[in-house]
Image (tube, rainbow, N blue to C red):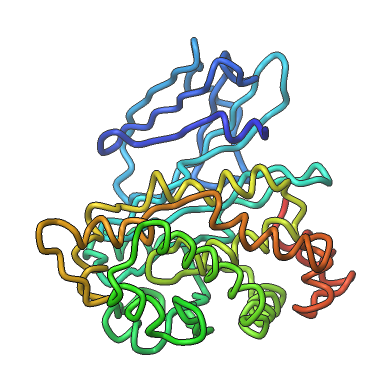
Length: 336
């Protein structure tokens, strides 16, 4: 597994940053440098990771995102950052930077983000969002979803609406399913079917995604939907594999929604969205597979792609209009 996956950067308190490395990490003992620019670090060492742990506190009045350069005796420098971007009121907002590609490059930090809806962003959250310099938002929600989860985002980013139904064949797919009082296994299989549907019936939307990525300016790009898990998760998975990130790492990134998607906070919203009664707590049990993140969900999409196209890059070439030159341009644009 990629070394970046063995490192966790967090902010347990305001102004404090913590790095934890697993014992298997090459950076279990390492020097640490810090910068607000992931491409530029000065020579000052701010501390050392000892026995897999490092912690530091410093003033950051502008709440700018911080990046850390780790270096050990056994490995060259590795730039890392907090994976979940702390935007007060956001849902499942993450940076996909840092992942190693088959060519030896790493996905650039601060270039591609993923998230759920941003309708609850607070004033502080909007200030932190503005600091990210997101120039384009690729929104996979339907118009009616967006109406109920609307947000005015700072910086007037270019919002590209690529509406994808959160279901199969109809926007009321899950409404209709929940009306039948299904079993858990029925909802899980419905999720698998929806993930296959993303492959088979949303080629135009994901094809447009790649064109937008190819023609965006140098500002950051955000992919989002209501939860930032499935429609966004599949889009990010396509992008990562086309950039050369191994599948095990793509699945790792997908499964981070299990950690960062606030299931408990979203229960009431999802119950209302799909008109599910929660009498005696039964409604929560019914909708839980919709809120959960399972590896089998993304694998359902990948299994279909592998069966009928061989691999994701072949699917992108045959169906999404991504040519050989485009793959090179994507790598040059979004990796370091």
